[in-house]
Image (cartoon, rainbow, N blue to C red; front, side):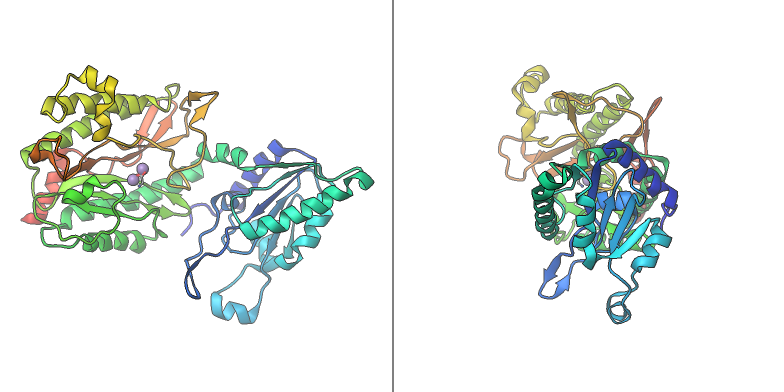
Length: 441
Ligand code: GLY
Ligand code: MN
Ligand code: MN
């Protein structure tokens, strides 16, 4: 299902991009290559996000050519219709579909790419092409560039500059428009349901992969493409491993389960983490540590509004976490000293936020002019503080070892402040216990 089906949306994105690159420039945007999984089996195809952002076209072996000011500004190179091939791999839009369904002014078979590009390269002096998407396409485009450059002395025209189109597109992607927020809300609603299900149904004796299956079931049965990153289902000491994805341990009742799982809907990601006791209420120490992380998260979110720096919520979260670490005896120095020395990094080793959008770690600059970026309405960032005490950390009191807690929400910067887009996922101790203890009953 798609919430972004309106051709106008993509036309408007191309318009803005073409206005930015201006006449005399040509943008060549390749689709993502097909990736092999093993032997002759391919990974499920996933379009490149920048290509999709500008075209909405999800097929492989395609190239979009954008030529601002030309009679045909938007050309799509695609796989032609092919009855026999389509019997094996499914329907293609083909040339007609590229025009009728995607708004191309012209469409050609991808086999004609060299000829079509040659005609256009002669006429421009700047080429926008991303070198990081499709290796095989790089060789082809660079060879055509080289040839067109060699003709420049005779023709007086031809490309003298190769530019990266990504920063222009990424700045647009960083500022979410209404249709993008609608897709993100759809992804978030499904993830919220998955986390609630997991809280209500995880029990001692189950394998982590059973909870992963529950999460996947919710994602797919409600129309998401699947997880937007490998789901982390980390029980007990596994939660102290930040990117634990084996998900193959048997859980025990009462221990903490950290689930970092989000889905992709219509090319947009959600990214949500919750930590809860398996089929039980929080034990006192678990609750104390959980409350520290929650307080850090709530205060970091509270600080978010246009005009603050991207790094500000991180600094707020670190301060609250460090005060908590000192209070419970995880750090045995005054909070001010721990903040100065960085001793807290032993228990909180990642950043608090990243941009979120089509990519889970979304595009867009974090620093501008050497400084942390100022937040603006329409930006979406995660807020995800945590506390992680390795099972073998002998500097930590024994009862703290093997505990990992993270709480992650997706936050939209609004003109007046911010909106927690993931607010429907239970987060307070009482909300969580209402689900986890009902599961045990
Ligand atoms: N799930 C990846 C992250 O939280 O950044
Ligand atoms: Mn995240
Ligand atoms: Mn996450």
